[in-house]
Image (cartoon, rainbow, N blue to C red; front, side):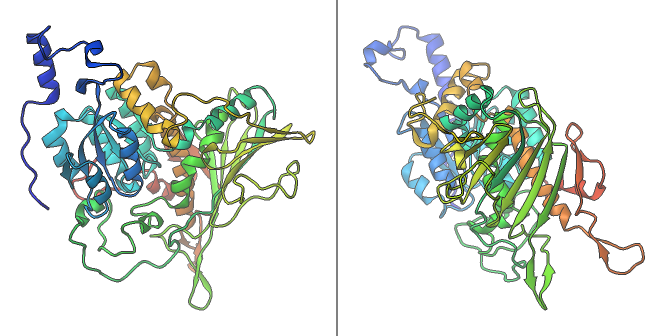
Length: 489
């Protein structure tokens, strides 16, 4: 890694403050009408840093930049080969591998950060950014475990910073359409929700890699590991396949849950669940006996999460998640030849009410209602559109940038569709499913000393306020993971 140059200790903010204080009316302050219509003064631009700038991070930082509307001042990635596209797009931005060094050297020149690293480092980076006074945009899932999600939610309030999780479908007008339909009572109270995805589309449910490979020269493997348990580098983990390993990823639920569960969570104003139960697919190896890999996410799973009634939905609600090719069957009121969710039925949501079924695809796309009467209701063209919806990803990053400029108490911040006040509890629900999946594989010796029991394979009762499973203590190890070495939240 090349040595980064020292920056000038006089920051952009210091310069502007000193200039305006000492030279009001001088050439430093120029009226906007003199600059020309549509001109944006440099001081009006947000200074943004990107952390994790390959993969999804490529579009996150580019969308926040908004074709030059803002400044990209620093870029950070543990693998400079993966970050190559962003480095080339923003050649004047300072380059880093370690976000901590970036904050130490450029902290005063950074207003906000996008964080698009693998799941296991979201929380430590976001917390460090907020402690340094930076607004944060964090890819989904917000965190790797439940405790981290709770801590980030509280930190955003404590430090009074603007936050947004990268589940861009939250800004899709289709979401607001479904909220409106439900508030009008079109489908009545809902007691059953089905959610499904075709993920994983990466290797999952496979034996732990045993090969040790040379670490690419562009990659800092220790920084990639961050707070997670040390394992040797292998291409089975990086760059994309990390999703299927609990040390780094959160499986199919973590990848798609914040996109798909978002709709019912928002519509019914759900909070902490009360119980979770699951079944998980196994890898069949050696004499066809089922083998569960505790280090890896399963190839398929089915999770049931229960919620109490809310002020808008007067029924207790059972939400069932399916992945790995599993999906629900057609409800009674949806015609046999109609797809479920997406046009190919690969991903979707079904919300089954007293009077009808409301459904949508990923990101809240293509919302519809199938009424008990046989009527089909679809979203009118142009409904609930706003100034952001024609932008990439429904303006999810751009609206966050505008809120950063307006401030924590602004109407722009309150209008964000996935600030941590919302996305923190949503992420807790998603990760609750993974807690059940990981507990499912726990086993103990039977009382008679012969064979094993699987006590994790039962309904787990959840105390949301205390963040605790109340009827199976071993499951609580997955509420808060242990960090490696000196890493801390």
